[in-house]
Image 1: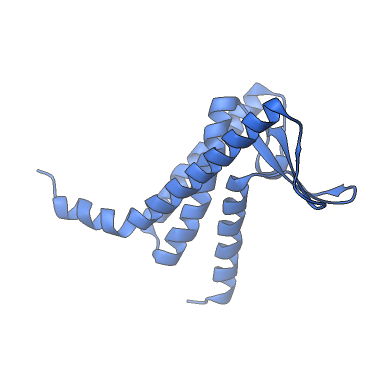
Image 2 (image 1 turned 90 degrees about the horizontal axis):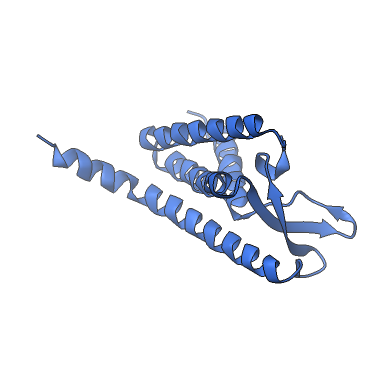
Length: 162
């Protein structure tokens, strides 16, 4: 009835992707849980002259873009992100090894932020890079992996011609 060889083949080829996704999701959850707990008891955490950990609740998408107080808009964006994650999982299944890993970086981060959108109705961002009074967008670990995955896919596509 079930073709076990099919499942073994999928398991072998996609196990690394699952590990990458799981690792990023757990790392993201741990860091967010720690910063939320810390900031409930204290103010922002000064790291050095260029980095602070300062919790900001983001209702938009990456780096605070498209923030809105509208529930309909927020829920629509969350639904679209869910569909995008499903599409990226499809791409992981259909892609070659390098693309599979890069898509896994994106999915791991996207799942971390998607979880927060569902659990908290906002994404906790906390890494604040700054120079004197200039502050870059506040972001989190998930955003780092999403950005790395996207940048590496772009670089790979530019540099490697088929």
